[in-house]
Figure (spheres, rainbow, N blue to C red):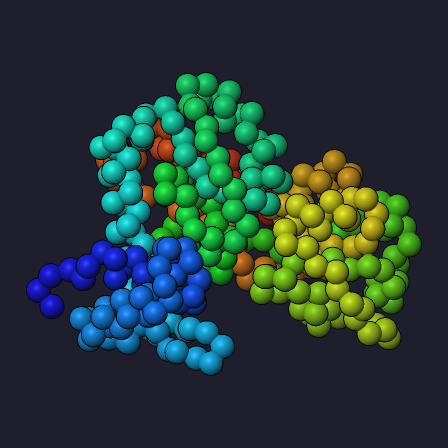
Length: 300
């Protein structure tokens, strides 16, 4: 085709691809479901490619759709960034961040004083998100998202290579000497993660004679680790969110066994001359701090 598709078709595609649902995309875009579906069909006809597989239980991106999505998202990010510069909202000293909630709470917040001390001229505006599929903050110059890297890895830089392990309060840890003891405790996990208690137990060479109990689930690690600190049970955790809590003694590992984590945190920050000074400074600082963090983690 000789020209770009209409932007409203591309916006419908981007929203539908994130949600894997025409209905959810319609709600986000304040449109009807049929209008979104028709725009997607028009886009597919114009491109001569099928972007979605329509399944009974929802949508699935085709290989062409998965390949096209990062390009469309990067284009919208560049448009938004340029608009912010044009309208004066991207002032050099304003740092607009969107950060995964658990990363912001457990890793960034304990180190934020160092950044603000080094760059006292930066004005920080931070919005938090739980999952990478949530709609990005339109004004965010830098995002830190959590995922498997299928989209994040194309658009950003991988920050972490964590391992997964159980954590609990020191008092509760004294009651756990083997996996059978663990099976008698309340176990906490998150519903949206790739790996679970089953993953950790199946990889663990230590045998257990008891079945896995019902798992209590929280929407974020902020909740599950708080429950663990209160001694309510045992939570699954990973290095980035648990290290400072372990170092302070608020949490302990009842077992030394851990497994590699399939998901990671990613830094998504558009490159280019329009990225302001505050965003550049934060990106440089974050990468330095994360390098130090990873070196210390490797030494443990």
